[in-house]
Image 1 (cartoon, rainbow, N blue to C red):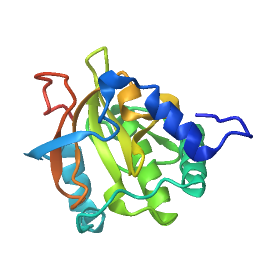
Image 2 (cartoon, rainbow, N blue to C red):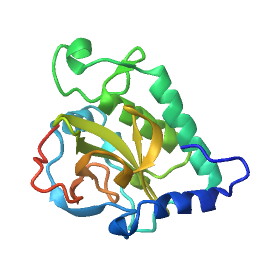
Image 3 (tube, rainbow, N blue to C red):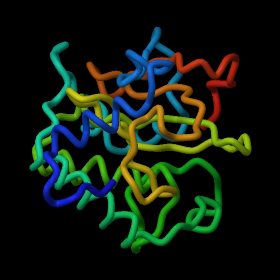
Length: 201
């Protein structure tokens, strides 16, 4: 997402969200539901690195989306997308659904997500605002993206898309994501994509 140099950051984001139209009014943030199953890959990741899945946060307002935070998010998203070469788990590990940080600069969608999450946490973004999210692509395949939960809405960092977009501007059906209160817990997402099979990945 690129803004003209003379445009106000907040004004530009407000206009972007307004452009979603009245049909999407109130949908700047995802609507999450009850607790749901943890993806098997994330469960195994947590077994190997339990400290990554113990982050608990009290219920509070989403992180404030400032110019500085936005610049950091764009830089991290661009750098990880450019520096990691896409390869499947089968190519890297010889089996499916291995969630890990990129290995030798290679990884699949979950690996991109984990690396972006790690870097943004190192930059000071709270874990409760960086949520691994499972979606279904228009072709029916499962995919993972990172949701940035902010005061101006939920934004998606994606290795298949160069721009950081509002979640409702993507073509995905949203299935489930990490809880904002506990990084080892997952919750369902209600986005209107009725009856999508939330057990993918």
